Length: 137
Image 1 (cartoon, rainbow, N blue to C red):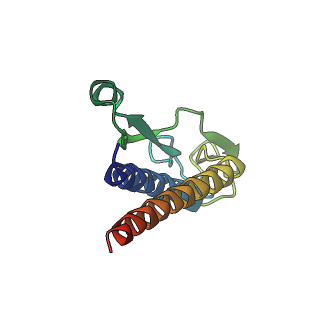
Image 2 (tube, rainbow, N blue to C red):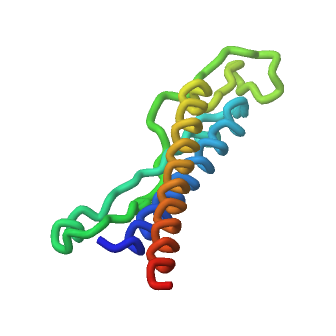
Image 3 (spheres, helix red, strand yellow):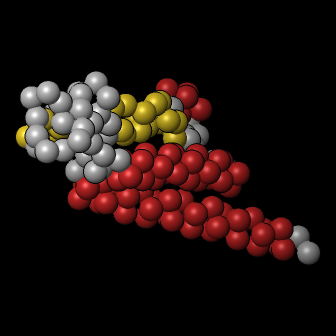
């Protein structure tokens, strides 16, 4: 595996963690939104990652992270009785997203640290490449 492959893997990791940070920020931004129906209520979203395992087994090389998609959480929505709320339905209920802010904050910290680790790996690979080039001087 060359150092350029390390840069590719670190770059794909940074891209994946960036998507993870964006979905977490979206979840936190919509955590307190209210709706009058189940169909229009925001649902927590999470990215699905996959390594390209088959190609890694064939090539015996580094494997970048692939984002397969973003899925909505199937946790139940929060149904709250609040007949005074302007968004309440005819029975007096409002619906809130299934976002757990504590879990989202922990996920955001994990994604941030993973992103930071990928940056450090890319920086270390860049320094090794520079030092290798200086050997020829």
